[in-house]
Image 1 (cartoon, rainbow, N blue to C red):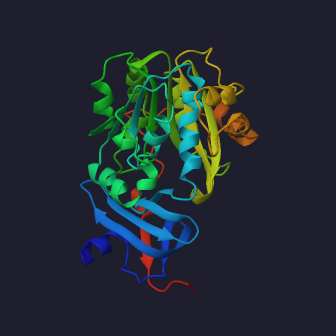
Image 2 (spheres, rainbow, N blue to C red):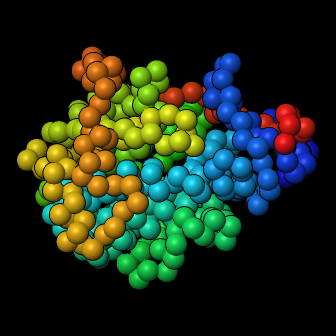
Length: 331
């Protein structure tokens, strides 16, 4: 990356042992002490970095935003994938939108009943970079004969599939940022199309941004309310991901209101499929779906609907620009 590019990106070259600063909002930043830069470069769509940090191991960072960390990515990815797949009686065909690290694909393919998983990610450079520099994410999933990787637009990829052809759709996307590529995939128009692609009893799950009592109003509750305009039943749930420094939100939508999302049968289903999870089980499921009173109140009162004509952005991408600062603090 040239010095001019770094200046526009809001970063400075740094020496080993310095700090990475992620500006979360005006007046609030998160800092990690960096041990080593494993990769930095630019794809057609975004700046990409992998740095090894003291508290969280290797971090995948795109456009200054930390996407996941080596030490706790399993919390996020098991929370994203398994409530939906465990609730479905027999998920044979699964679609993933995004998920370039490969960890979502890894978790889906742990279910032996899955016969094919179609993953569509727009940035092939990120996929290839992660396979080379952070192979722990995919753990060989791309080599599984059931995996079908498509480099392209997730919306176009899903549109090209036959109606009623997927049992589960998982949207593992970046947040809907102003200037970012993903905001259209959080709209009624997209969710309506996705619903048509789901077979009888199908389930859609999407990551839904920060969901603490302080931040859930930004996108978590609007995504929930937007899904309710399309699906008969929507469940919001959260889990604390330490490297995200927040409760993280997910929204799960079902085509059949009778689908059991209590989690009571999760342990039996996992045992039947010979799955031993690090994080997800029936007790974790109940904790995830037991929203605190402020979030329940927020969801009940939410009126905003996200559509193409009136998109809702979490924030400007400039607000989240990461910076490197030489010699910031003691090692």
